[in-house]
Image 1 (cartoon, rainbow, N blue to C red):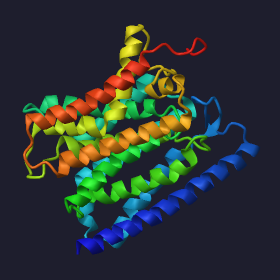
Image 2: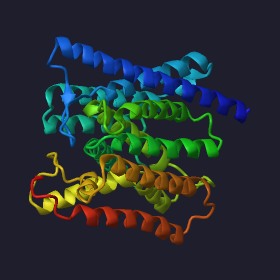
Image 3: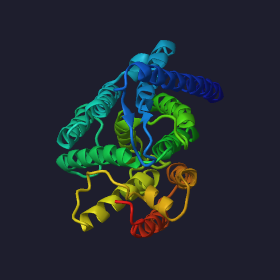
Length: 359
């Protein structure tokens, strides 16, 4: 039975991947056609200083909607799928998508963006998706808001070089997808969403790989931010070990391992900018990705470095969630050491002075 279900999910993934490629191709062609008639079409200027259409986020959301529709059409028990938690996830993700879409079009004021991100967190909380870490529910709510806002901003900030955010986001989804499959949890309603989203990212990566033909824009990064934050709460923060036990240290270690690169990049940028007494919320070319470029790596090589680190994080996450029967302080130390080493290497590189002509 599990083999049959696995094959169905595999076919769905391949079909979704092909559809994502076609959808992004059509969006790219549409942007070029509209650009001839309308020079005001939205483009993004980033590290490469080249204007490219920022339509990738639209394809993410379309794939997200199609995944839900397909599941509801073919699954006779779809009523179990559309529970309060899933509906809350849908509303929060839609809110994040609309925030990014509005930001791409009108350059939203940071306060409005921050407020909307808090609203996304509150939607999750009100529909039952919040971090259950402390004994005090208020502290849990506050931690949830901090987590959601933090991840939405970190994914957005990480989208500064071709392919980076796409690779990192896909790796986080891959870790969760592999964990659910290895545990035989095929009935988990999140699995179909993760498979569809992973296919959407891989289809987009073809157009986002350096030199990119298309960017995801804030539409894509805000969509991914709230999606990853919500799934991270359900699978990591509120997840259990292989024996069904809730171990707080394991939860924290699994979170920082799976989300290591977004956490490290955002933390590094915040520390550097606060030390310079500048706003950490204003964009700049001082991210870990940029500094890897400053020391001689090409954009493709930087993406490959992040892909390798992401693969290591995926492997470690799978081990933590699926193969450790008795979690101990030694496990916390070893996997925590992995995070610290990656942090230290990237931070040391990032505090080196950039070229004089870079602000």
